Amino acid sequence: MSAPPVIRAQEGDTAVMPVAAYQEAVREAASTLQAEPARLEEVRRHIATLEQVELNSGERMTVAPLLGNADAELDAPVAQDRLDTVAAQLDAAAHDQSAARLAVLEQVLAGPAFQQQESLLDRLRRWLADLFDRWAVDPVGNPAAGPVGTTAAQIVGWSVVAVAAVLLIFLLAQWLQTVLQSFVGEANAAREQDGALPATPAAARVAAGRFAQGGDYRAAVRHLYLAALLTLQEQRIVARDSSLTNREVLAHTPATHPVHTPLESVVEVFDDVWYGVHEPDLATFEHYQAAVDDLERRAVAPKEQPR
Image 1 (cartoon, rainbow, N blue to C red):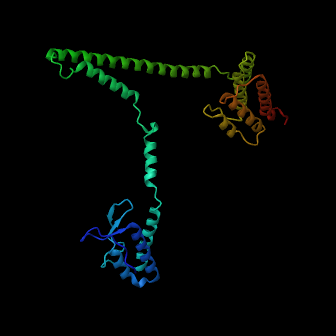
Image 2 (image 1 turned 135 degrees about the vertical axis):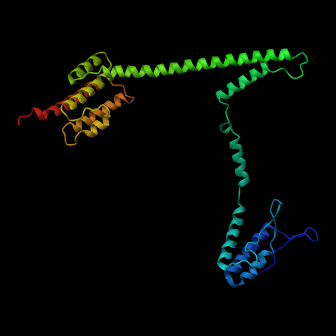
């Protein structure tokens, strides 16, 4: 094996090898060991002489023996793997762009999206602290400030802070009360509306016609669906269970029953009108009314047929 090129600054200095020469020495050692595994000890002694490496930046670093000391147990395959790994890492380091990537990362992290924003509560605390500093603490170096003035300023400062805290608590309480009243009002309105719903298919149809005459086709469609649901419950096709969703009502309807197909269309239109974004018109109401009529005829037809 050829001796690696070295650099000596002064007499007595440790031999320093450029990183390119060190890389070439590792490759040569790996090739030698691959061709002649029996030369393991020779390769190990050669690698052990490579102690100092000078990087492209001019920085010098001490490297540990890649193949260990002479008394360490080591076989040729393991040594070959170590040399190949170091050679591959040195090849990859030549194209490393860590500095450029770190610069881009620092630029991104310095952007406004990653800067910590001061919350409203933090602003309030800072405002109160500044207010207290202005009113409760004497300015440094004020020769006119005495014990009496200091006490008076502290009393005024604490009074202002206390009034501000009470005012803040009052405003928060008023806001919370308004929110709770809104929620309770909506819940009570929903319960009142549910309690006023018709209890029979005929009453639901009458209500649907009344809403349609008033131009409220959304409520009319809802009452038509209620009429269909009440008909299915009266005919014992579906159970009287208010916890069931519309899709669950459809799922509980036997697939072989004549009402299953029209019920699927009735549920789909109702969900689209009541929960969706489509506002029904007169044509939608009339088409839906015909679908509900067909469903109700199918629901009562088996009982009306002669035995």
